[in-house]
Image (cartoon, rainbow, N blue to C red; front, top):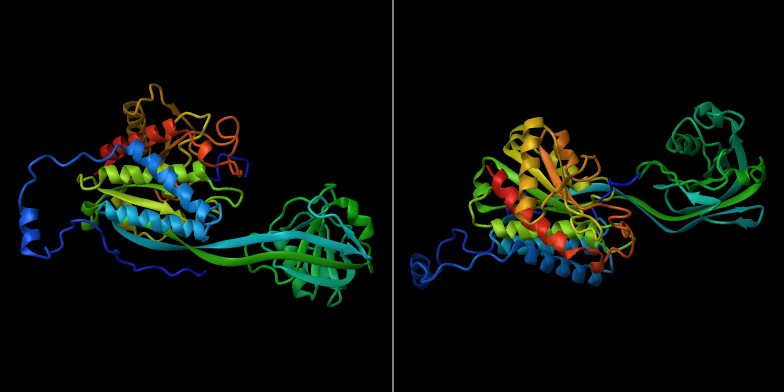
Length: 448
């Protein structure tokens, strides 16, 4: 989850359904099998496992596969792919028809801190020098050329770079126009690298070019403490060690057997990826576990349910955005509601409900979720505001009613939010169980 805070090309697997497991209407392989199918069982079939207990089992399985994959599930990583495969297997076993959809997203990884050497002296990293996000890795050496440094809009005009000689290091000031504009103009003028000076902050601020492909040269930002040393003619060396590229990740889409015949469906989903800092057990293995458990509980009940397990949420909702963007108008109208499960086991939180979209439909989603939590044992479930940074957002923007269950992020609800300590011990099993059970009730009520 990336919203309750202040801030490779993978193949698309078969566009149609991928095979299902279970007794799904295929012809019997033998007369004995035909007899078995035709003969009613002597006793009633066992009821499905409790959704709450199944959610805990799924959570523990996700923890194991995350550890085997290196300790995180960053978008398009081995961990995220392993979870997609695990979820697809479990859903097929429950009788769902599974397919994968692709989502392209911008990827940036700084492998080591950017470095700046001025006149032979290397200055400190992080506090005084930061690489611009989405600038590529590389090393460049050249003489400083200050760029219209006395103006607030330094480096925002092509004419500002008229005096720059090819191979020099452009040094504009921060302000007025985006970093990407300054870097793009410097690159066009023949600069070997760019050093943007923040003339108001002592330390280098985090900054970004917005996406891969903007720059082909190293680019960093520094605090005002280095401004005097970056005079025209000073010899500098700029080094960045980073990967900036476009990658593709897979989301998992699964339909219960009735939904595959067309017509309206209710969707439920969660995101599979984590941040690089840790295993993301509450954010959002808890949501994936609850989603899988609810889907299993509703399998073969006649409920028209579609599951969406999203890739690359933490980097900008890329999986859910790609899915919604790919829907035709008729397909969007067929989705009566979307239920989002993002962080449903916060250690110090309580389940709350949010909803948005077309007013009357959103209220129906809210009522179904509140009723679900009451059935699950939450006497007075709370309500929280709808915000835009989780996978419900693309659905709401497309005019589809959406809502979800949320147990809180950051202090005090989840002090391990986006940290390495977001492990199994960070998940409240009671809230996870209640959220999974509540989701089953809500989806039953919302199923067309």
